[in-house]
Image 1 (cartoon, helix red, strand yellow):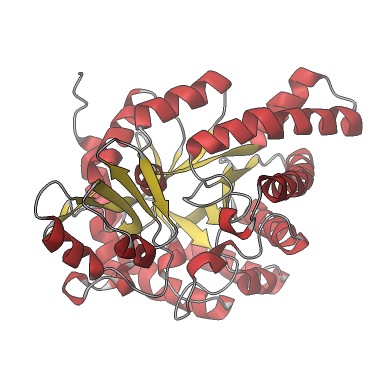
Image 2 (tube, rainbow, N blue to C red; image 1 turned 60 degrees about the vertical axis):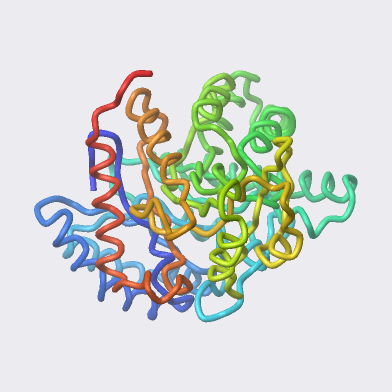
Length: 404
């Protein structure tokens, strides 16, 4: 739905269905109810998650026409697609396989091509659109700096071929589409600082040379094409896990002219060990579930950061010299306190306040997807949970901005 601060939606990766018919059935079950509560008299935007198998089915003209007809009838529009998880995301162990296949593979590239072609046909005429995607690859799959450099170069080359496709779509249809790269803890692009370094020192130099040679354009034009079509997916949870500060992030992006394709509004878990450390250690164990990857970044008494690939490793290595943990969990936005544990809700509030002062994107997407693996006392019906999340964001956006 449209707000004074951009189009606000939620990501449909909360709904199961790697097969299109299953996912479509889940959308039909939940979306009309959600829209009726939040936007009964206006169009309602959807952040669509399409798995690889579903993307193949939805590429068929008759399936796409059926979906478009339903969207029109329900007054719903699609403007962003989540292209991060390729395969199973529900009722299976995901963990680091959420990065599979990565950007070193043809499969990831071909999947992303399909998503953009689908989006180009779903997108309203007066809007641009984006597809989010993983941060090149999973860092821990590559043992040495040499291997990571190889993976980075191969992934970048594949992304430049997607750039060709985005240029073609814009030329033929007038639709402006962008690839939104989502840094994540333990990705090759672990955080937004990594993303900016890769963007300025690898993507831009390689991409400018590539476009100048292939299309005989000037350097300045090649740079503008890249800045337009390849953007950041700013996931607030991921940035919070890495202890990155919103003001610094936005200042650095502005410095280099890098655009934000979307803000993914999400919240991590925070454990403050300065009081009741053993009780809090027991409390965080309740979140040690086997489906998703829950990277942990610990801050020591000396303010150094220690990285753990998943919660079990962090639990095994806890010591009294760790003052705080940030845990990748995508917990509900509207809850600041989980008993003895906290969330990084304040980082969402700060990011949105900065966005209100100086808009950095037109797209705001709630991405809370771990409802099904939360402790039982936090479970609510999915439709009502999504409504509560979006209502909290709307209230936060409507809060007055206070100057420091």
